[in-house]
Length: 62
Image (cartoon, rainbow, N blue to C red; front, side, top):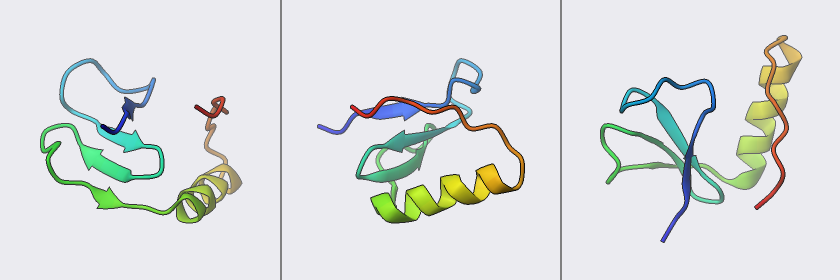
């Protein structure tokens, strides 16, 4: 079973996006469907977010 994680910036409830390490991203409201995202694509996405000035906290690897 996959472990999905919500952003620490998300409000409680079901209005957020979740990330599953090595699996992809999904909408909390539709958990049966997810968008596959490779580890390298996710890393590139995070790097691009950092470049434009957003703060993305580092998290230890599971």
